[in-house]
Length: 318
Length: 263
Image (spheres, rainbow over the protein chains, first blue to last red):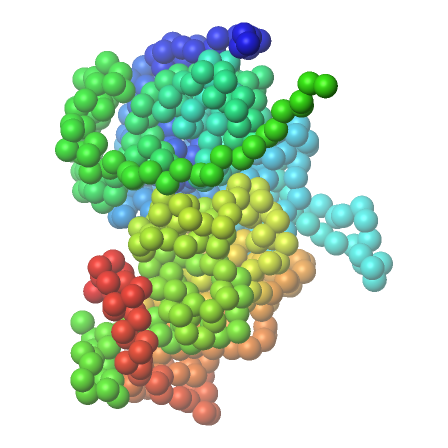
């Protein structure tokens, strides 16, 4: 039987995808909750010297610290600015605590608040209600957190007040996943976070993947597809594109690097030298992976734990 | 490291961390769905699953429900939590359908500052706009305190800088503040605080946290002096029963044999 390909081939190089869709001064979302962080794409944004960005990311961690140090970000929208118990993020702290070397506009949320912003964005709603924020000081520093009266009275007839958050519609969302076909049907397993909502909310979307697979691989397990190709503009094959974070079933998290980052980022000169050695001096992520070396790759290698395949069934011709 | 005596002479004395872990695990008796952080809460849940609460389902902020890791996780999103778990949920499902819908019995949180009603600061030391120290922020802590049935807080360092009369910034609000701001509180807020000196507790909103349990050998006056508000001491102040040989054996040989968290 012939396998027909209906989808357009959206495969690109990372250089071209970033040049085409990540424009100076735009709003960019990078998502991936500890798992599958689109680090390679962040590095390409740094390499191309793209500046003036409003960066949206729930967990602003190492890649955000690097993009801040490279001068890419003017405004950060985030609900967690930490390095997962592995020490501080030096650049973020310098920017916020001392405006060093420049002030940073920081728009602070909680995790569910940002999740709701993506949901509102994906559904093209004017706002989204959330049962958070009463009593917190966050609304006093973020005027996007607002209260409305529910139009539906409670059982006792009283009016319920509820916080709402505005939608977020990034100019481009970038995510990393295990695999996709050439048209951009994205398949993930393990932690899928808020990636689908962040992509559906965006005007454009780039997905970097560990591997681009044949159409029939995707079609053998369509429930594994978390984002259909119509929501994706560019598909880029970038093996180990999430390092130092991990890709479930492909490689583990580089906890040594997470711990090392506190020291690297503590001194601006050392951080600049790191960017030079690991981003500016390299052409692309393939060179980054080569520079990591076989020892690091072996340290991050994982064993297998395959799932039992499901049976989708076929209609028996009668 | 501080050590406290154990009843069993043939066992190496329990460390403070081990005693705190055991105290937290015992407090999980009768609980079912527990939202755990990394470190001591994960150890306490694992110990409770082997002792006082065998059917606890452990849920992580990353979206993992019913984790059965092959070794202790390094983060709340560690790959070992995914492999072999019962379910992995998206963020909208985890925060919306599980947490906000009130399905969590106990949430574990840490913080840089806590006040007498269990309101928590994990955002800044100093002024928010020009902080002396920028901390990670809420993450999901604000939602955990607002939506879990009750919250256990772990704060190893019991000092006046951490146990404050007034928070520098209220990241996560307990039910008293929710109500005062015009919201409808859902849970009980913070009911237990496990510290290096002992345990602070309260049972219902409106009550202040009071000192209810001490680690062996700790003087209650020292705890009061290390607290930034006039800490009340319970009339029936107890001493935490030292870890049993069985509890220590589970912690050291079954749950954390590689000493990932136990030092």
